[in-house]
Length: 265
Image (cartoon, rainbow, N blue to C red; front, side, top):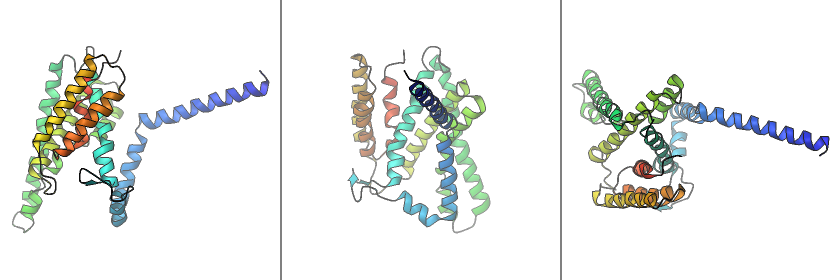
């Protein structure tokens, strides 16, 4: 091999390490998430009209899926967030395996009990603040009706802060993650029950599709299918369809499927 060829390989390898280092840095500190939050806050408070135009932009025109328009808001909240909750479910599931931070499963009781405080506490504080600032005003009943808003946890930011404070392998991260996922599940249930969409009323019968999806995932595991794609696209896709037809938030679709996936070797 010529000197020039060897030098080219060394430069390519060095560049690859640098690129890998940049990607790892961005992932480790969730730079895209932080940048997105900051950009959204700035735009929502300075260019509100533009902000709404962006989140309601329809890249696929008037195409709809199960009666829902495919705007940016739907793509992020109802499709991309499925993957995020799936990753969170993976972390929790692995933490409950032998040797994990939440094993034996009895250790999971504490974060699940903590979830009650994470729902009742913010709702109670919201009612208190509403009573203090809006009692006797015409807006009292309207503002008080928003009590369900603070019950959900921003799981993405909570996860990020926990990783930065404790380190990504600390047991506290899995503790908080389980608490946040359970808290969000309750929050989504509150939205379905207390803030129903008149255009898409809740239809619990469609949850039978989710049971079938879980059965499919279990069958794949019993058949010793090791590839992740059938679990995600077949079982996960069916779970997503069941939730959206039931008019429940489909972001939790993979949370029902991930526990049935093969454990890492």
